[in-house]
Image (cartoon, rainbow, N blue to C red; front, top):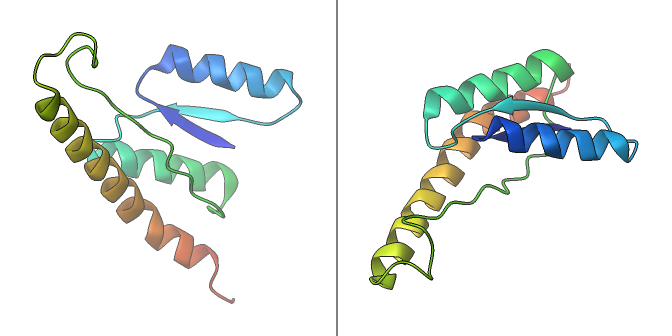
Length: 106
């Protein structure tokens, strides 16, 4: 497994749990809202594993301290949805060409 997180400490903690349970995991620090960082993560994954077989976008975000703190819930929902859509688009765009290329007959 190749995982990414903006928080390197959290990524390493997740990696360690996966390895402790007998799995394999490599992590890469990445801000999923920055296209160059996403491309770098995709490239690092392909460099290490040779291809991408499955892409799971489990990236989320929140703004302004969460629902218990914010007064303008519409603003929180709008910002969260915009950022989530940006993340999904950026990741999919960066990975889809690589995935397609990985599954072409030789």
